[in-house]
Amino acid sequence: MTIQKDKKKIAIFISGRGSNMKAILDNVTTGKLKGLCNVALVFSNKCNAPGLTTAKLYKVKTECLESKGKKRKEFDKQVMDLLKTYDVDFIILAGYMRILSENFLHAYENRIINIHPADTYLYKGIHGYEWAYENNMKKTKITVHIVDEGVDTGRILGQREVDIKDCQSLEEIEERGLKAEHEFYSEVLEKIFKGEISL
Ligand code: GRF
Image (cartoon, rainbow, N blue to C red; front, side):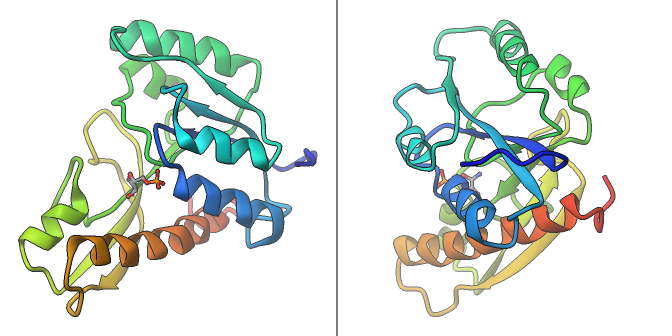
């Protein structure tokens, strides 16, 4: 991927599959994020994350540091040291399964964005689609928000309703929800990078 100057520099953080990361990379390459940002790196706290393999196909720089067994503060210090080289404007969490330490949050205050597969007013934490399925919900809401010191408590930047009333299984809900996530995350990022959403 060619690095363009004068664009926002972003790091995408993943821990696993990385389908949201892939959607962002597609949009940076040929879609709504083209010309608005450069992906300086994709970072994972798991070196065997399948998403890293996907990122390499896009010729994006990848980095990983194993977080397993490490204390939050120490690990985040290592990540911050690594990030210094890249000097990014935003950190885009896309299935990054770690809570960030206070120091990290302060260093990137209002510049860390996350996508959550539910309405964060109603449901925080992991397994958002299971929650919708188990509660027989007719619709759910994908949320893009700023990351603060709480778990999914940060200021909401955008929400997209997803109709799931005719879904017969959890898999169907997930599939529909993820499709919406893939479109919506880049839509919100586009507005952020264009300055249409103030942070
Ligand atoms: C997504 O459902 C996202 O909302 C949540 O974690 C999941 C990550 O999926 N934060 P993927 O790795 O992007 O496929």
